[in-house]
Amino acid sequence: MLATDTTYVLAIAGADEDANATGDLDVTAGGPLRIEGSGSTIDADGIDRVIHVLASGELTVDGVTITGGDRPRTSMDDLTGSGGGILDQGAAELYDSFVTGNTSEPDGAGIAHLGTALRVERSTISDNPGADFTGQGSGIYNDGDGAVLVNSTISGNNGGLVGGVANMYGRFLTIVNCTITGNRVNPAANTATSSTSVPSRSSTR
Image (cartoon, rainbow, N blue to C red):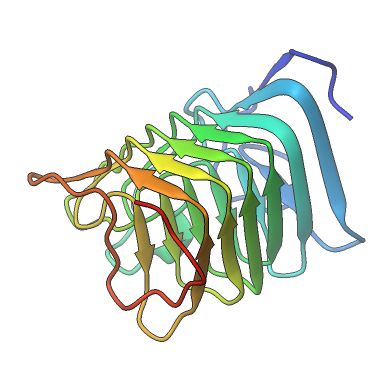
């Protein structure tokens, strides 16, 4: 559990490392990890993305602000460069949290989901700018399985091709009672868009 209303700044530079030695916080095998924040902030301060959930990792974030993540593109087919705030290649859940002020050149400046499960509930994904004209889903980019958004807001995200939520071909995304508004693509404005149809029980734009 993090201390209440405290900001934790990542300070050891060095991206593309997956053993928690440098750069982002890596969630690996060894059992589920739960981060309870009570209003606390994890700030990557531009040295890397904030959190990387590896394929073997399971993460729950509750009451935390995720900010300051930055992921440049290393090649045109570099999906691991996606996810300025969170790159989820495993299973991740967010409750009562904020993902804001993160950027990435490829996809998913806020959250990039490439894993087996993602649940975002009672959370806000906002003001995450994608730095690349070809980037998709600057709020949330979904190219994984089992993605669910519930009672959440995705707003003010700015992307190259898709500003708010990008759901890739053949993937299923459930949206329940969410607000998706004020997101922009470059150069046109867009409130909520997807590269394929989005199966959902209910949604609010």
